[in-house]
Amino acid sequence: MIILGIETSCDETSVAFLQAKQKQDKVEFEVLSNTISSQVEFHAKFGGVVPSLAARKHSENIDKVFQLAFKQAGIKKKPDLIAVTKGPGLAPALLVGVNFAKALAYFLNKPLVGVNHLEGHILSNWLKPIGKNSQFSIPNSQSFPAVVLLISGGHTELVLMKGFGKYCLLGQTLDDAAGECFDKVARLLGLGYPGGPAIDKLAKLGNPRAFNFPSPLIHSKNYNFSFSGLKTAMLYFLKDNRFDFSNRKINRKTKKIQQDITASFQEAVTKVLIKKTLKAAEEFKAKQIFVCGGVAANTYLKASFLEKSEKVPVKFPEKDYITDNAAMIAAAGFFHPQPAKNPLELEVEANLRLG
Ligand code: KG4
Ligand code: ZN
Image 1 (tube, rainbow, N blue to C red):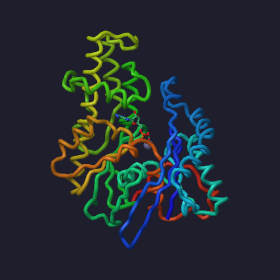
Image 2: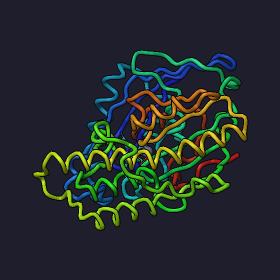
Image 3: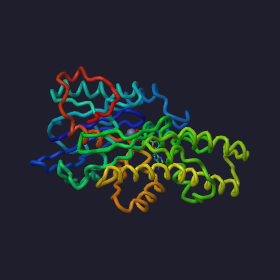
Image 4: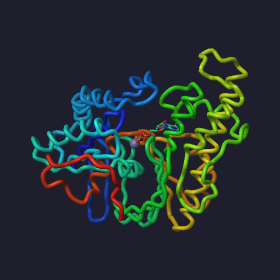
């Protein structure tokens, strides 16, 4: 079957076509196209995503992105299923994708499923680059139970995955998400938006042990996280030391300090994420750890995870599917229990299906 995926939850307008073949319990996914139009540069001048403007940009772009994805997929037939992100995300932005999907489903007379964005991130781990197949079995007994660390701009969650569509929330952030913390700290350091990639790049030249920033809740007995304290600690650290990186022309010595701060900040975030994930993997006898969501793109986090997880294999998604994309939404659509009876009744909502 061909699945059309549509994603507009934040600042990427994305449309993808995924071919999914199933023979008994064997599944084969092939991404035929995964077109993404990013609004990152547009929102950078505001220091973050402006929801109403994001929705306007999605409306302007979605038909062009759809046409490009359709052309690139090289298919002659209609999709068999349409999967669209129904939440969580920015409500005005989500509505653009959902309404576009509803209209397509209605006129093509094809079933429509509303997919949870976070489930999409989880499924990104089963996708291969365009032109390559990923093959797996539905029981996937070599992977499950698995522990999933989901770290995006809006969410930080530890999930026990017992199978496709079977998720149990072990813990989550009590305040800011890890990605949000990267973005806010980057702003304090004069690095602009989005903060994650900028910190990642600068930190490669810094010393992760130069400064000691807090890793909140690292010793707590549960699987929850908290990152707002780290952001506040950074604010006072910069104030107390009179570090000001807002000036564009910073000298070599100041640059070195900035590099050391970003590297030490990453160490503080990475330490707590890895410690809790490995603890969960041990407690639940996980056969695999999956890391996903935009922060999974962080090179220091990935290297540290691969080094520290000696007992359980750790998997990160392929580069093209780490940040928001529609291929992962199409993949999650494949596992959706059933389409809406009337596609026009699909509503925007936010909860991950647990069970
Ligand atoms: O999953 P995602 O693309 O969108 C949401 O669902 O939120 O995640 C976006 C987040 C942003 O906070 C961004 O700063 C962060 O992912 N991010 C990174 C990196 N690339 C993106 N954080 C750390 N290091 C990176 N290389
Ligand atoms: Zn996302």
